[in-house]
Structures are given as C-alpha cells and as structure tokens.
Image (cartoon, rainbow, N blue to C red; front, top):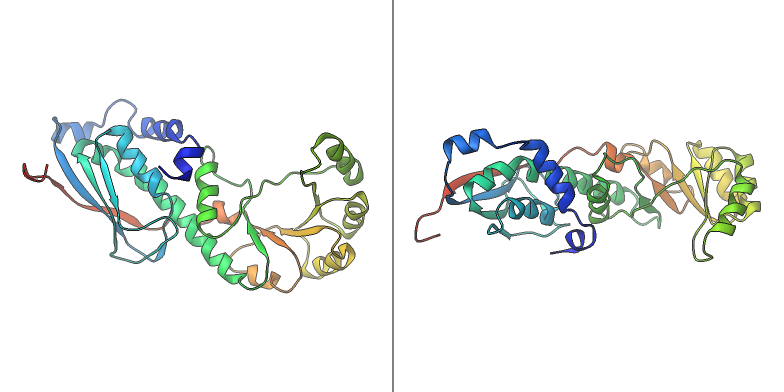
Length: 275
C-alpha cells in the first residue's frame, strides 16, 4: 500500500461511500449474478490528464472482495491518454459491478484535481512561486483531494483568519511553538504594514488588486513571505508571475477542477483455466 493508504486511514471513508451507494444490497447485480463468479474488467482513460488515486480505486474492490487483484500499468502522477489501458481488475464479478461507481468516483475526482493542478503549476513554471491549495474541499474528501493536489505538483496549505493583526500575532507567538510559522491574512496596505510590524512570518494578500500586491511586496521588503489568495484560476494565474510573491493559493484546485473521464470496460467472466 502507498502513502495515502498507509498514513490517512481511508477505509472508514470508503466504506461510508459504499454504504451510501449500497444501503442494503446491490439489487441489479444480485438479480443477474446470484453466485460468486470470477471475472475481469479493464480501466480505460478517455481523455488526456494526470492520474491520481490508484490505490484508493483498488482499495474499493478489495474491501468488497478481499481476493480481488488489481494490475496497474501506470502510477499516480503519470500522464494518460485516451484509449490507454490503466489497469486490469480481477475478482468476483459481483464486487467489480458493485464497486465500479464508487471506485470511479474517487479516481475521476482525484485525477481531475491532479490534472487541473498540473495545468496551473505549468503556468507558474520558472517563477519560484509555490502553488497551494485551500480548505475549500468537498466534505469528507479533504485527504483525497489534498493528496491529488500534491500528485499534480501543488502543495498543501491550511489557511486561517485573523482579527486584530498585531494582537493576533502576539497571541499566536505565545501559544505556538517557536518552530511554527505565523500567517496573517490582510486585505489592505494598512494591514500589511501592521502585519510586518507585528512580526508575521507569512502575509496573505487576500483579494487585493495587482497594483496593491506590488505595493505590498515593496512594503514587506523580504521581512515576511508573501501569499496571494482570492479567485485564482487557470484563466488568470499567469498575471501573478511577475508580482514578486512567494506563494499562490487557489481554492479552484479542489472546488472547480473537472473530473478526468475514465471508464471500466470489457467485463467478462474468467474461464476455468484463467481462474
């Protein structure tokens, strides 16, 4: 098992998703397949993109059928193309049918986020700017979506809010370990000055104009790291390349990325010799 299955304890979340899709039984599958039957199915890419979440995809099937096997022909982070065979899943056909939708939902969503993140990262290439995600994730899916951001070349970041900049920084310094960074979110140049004087480590420039961000970078003068946040998308991120900021955070990485179109095809039972 890889990083995401070892460290993030995903089984309860996957089981919850399976229970949502199969609250009592998979009536359609059980009606046509009342008994166990070994079979196989292919995972096929239907468009260009970056794949992410393969271990999650596989785990859905092994939760339903501990004997299920998944042979992958790619790894998380790989570029895939239409028609490319990504994996072959072998197991009880009932498990393959019952788990298909949940497995694809995770894989398509995570791959879509990785693909979108990769596209935004490419637009910042050569600038030294670090692309960050936000907490704008779908409920109960944060660990999957933030993992997908990393696969796509972005970095994870948890933002916070400040009320009363100088006081907030002082209180944070008293509470937090000296090894922790203090970040302050500001909306005006006056707040930028206050955050610098208070000794913030990172100053987030929230929904500021390009002109004000340039002024803020000049005011900060390297005394703190700078982060830009607010409605950053694939369509407008390139404008930030030469402002001089250190980080760009984009909620769009997780809340606006389209899914990557993937499909399970060629389901068939195994012969006695194959089984």
